[in-house]
Length: 335
Image (cartoon, rainbow, N blue to C red; front, side, top):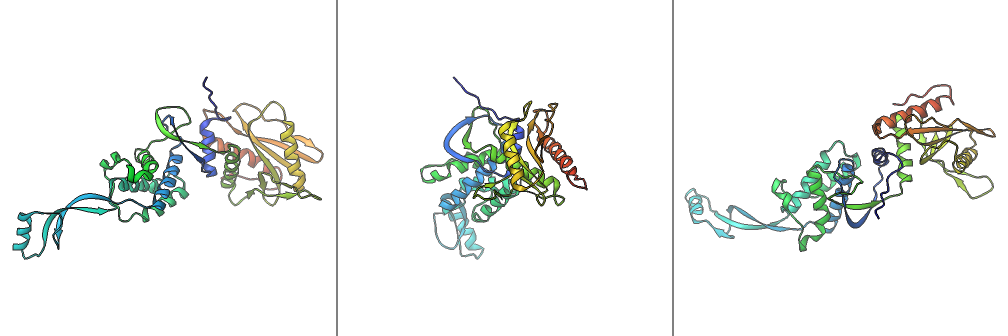
């Protein structure tokens, strides 16, 4: 029996939120087989940079390579003809074929080449690119990448290169991964889905509203106790609060979700709160509900496989902006 576990929302939307959240999943050491796709290209770039940093911490390996050129002293195999020409030109040197033992090895050039791809890749997150740049500065004795370096493989003495080299090839060849099974080599990753979604939603609103309205996460103490309430969304100087739920909205209010957001609003002493969740296009939002003096409003992020994740994020920001605009004199226009 094979069990296929899928995200609650379209895969592209989930990965977009994880990317915005900037959360690096926890790697599992056990390899797996997954399908190639462009969805997780940025994740592979982060994996590679992390693996490269581990290699640099353990130390780059040196290796022998064949070289030819002029030397001031005899080394390796001397070429009599070339050395004689140097002598008759008045140059006291010998021309030799010899082996150099340095960091300019195919494996190191492979890692350096992939690091430069990540550092120059505008689609990659700025933090990942900065980490790649720092790694490049620690590889100044390594030569330029050449296509033949793609065939370099880790051996017994360079076993700590295995993961970084594999991921470097994926970066250079512009490969990606999806969450589906396939023939490509990959590593398992694990993260609590709800947390990146919460951070991703908050970052979408922060970026959209910019300086017009701060969107943060704060704690509020329940009076007379040591317990705290931590709303996922706090708008402005506690203009209103909200809670993010990684789930599709239903036909009626969920009692536990409603109780939780009411508790957040009561702890913050606010009369308005929002419950942010997901709904397919065309699915109507629930009507606001009044609990005492507190009004709870549902605002859903569109979750439709035909809808671009960036467009869905824009629609969600507009909906939240319209809701906040009703709570204060001036309207809010997401950027």
